Image (tube, rainbow, N blue to C red; front, side, top):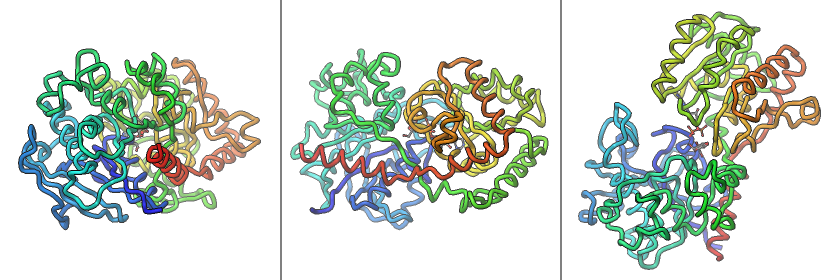
Length: 484
Ligand code: ADP
Ligand code: GLC
């Protein structure tokens, strides 16, 4: 059979531009698919961070007069790992300082519908008969709301290939004023319940879900949860109707990028055979962040966007009780102002015990994963989550709320699961401060029992989280769609 060709549409890709897990997935899944013989090419907006990688690129196509959009070009290059990357060079929409979605002061770019509308428009052009490229995909794979209009554009095109759509987080939907339907040159008929209308707005996410031939999301448990009222964010009706077209595929991790035995971000490397590096990383982090240097005190860590979703408000509330246990806490994150301020004020109140770093720091996030004893993820909801994988691989058992992908990827540690070798962290049900506290207390109790703690750490580290299995599941979905 000829090689299957897939256009992978995404708004961020590690290591060039990252605000969260979507970048990690976009950096690793396409590469894993290539390993199993799929010809995947990735398309992204040409933000400055992407254009910096395009120095030796070639111009693949030019779009001087796409109705509704400024002049733009499509550039092609190859990433270090061999992955072909296409960037949309459109200075009027993408050449600016700030993040992919927000400006330097944290406000959404006002022209986001155009910025991501263009990503969808070009992706759809590449997936239909009039594509200017000789490489034509067999299907287009869109990710999250930023790619959501791709299906709507494909739907009105001639000779369009099928598309699949992956939900990474249903809470972010890209809903805008209905006037954008005309501004983005979509036909009026799209703006309907059976289309991309969503409570009086035009919705990129709804478009993604409605027009996709198949929908995937990033864990089997989240695939079920989004079909209910609590986590459906208004889309549950549509998702229930499409239930037989939804597949949950658990994310994997980039095991080269996240490998404690070879991680370039770590002061000291380690592996199951020699764990002394882990203790040295702990000491180095304590020194770096001004924590009391103490090998024995349990060091709890969180690295996360600071938003309601991530539930770190619970950890901040119980922090004083935890520090008394005693324990130390290190937090790295950015997000809601109030949460940032609360973290900073705890750091000021408990010097030497609580460290807060506000910002996004890839290198430090690796060091923290490696240095900490336990990793805390009390997410209210979590489509998949990646840090619970990273922390397991770094011998730092995660403490997680039983939700979404966290429930699919962390096995609660009990005498039985520790004995049968399946334990990999601590799981609590019910989002309350006491439930989180109890789970951490269970972890701390086991931590004091060195033999059993070492066993748990080892069980975490030997788990297989590579992308291979997930990539095969995506390939299964691609084949099913193409055969249907
Ligand atoms: P989400 O995509 O919802 O933020 P994930 O757990 O899937 O959650 O992915 C988050 C990714 O972003 C992880 O790789 C995590 O380490 C990283 N990350 C989050 N906040 C920070 C930060 N402040 N500094 C460095 N990395 C961060
Ligand atoms: C989203 C989700 C997160 C998931 C990531 C990658 O940002 O919030 O749970 O791991 O996408 O799929």
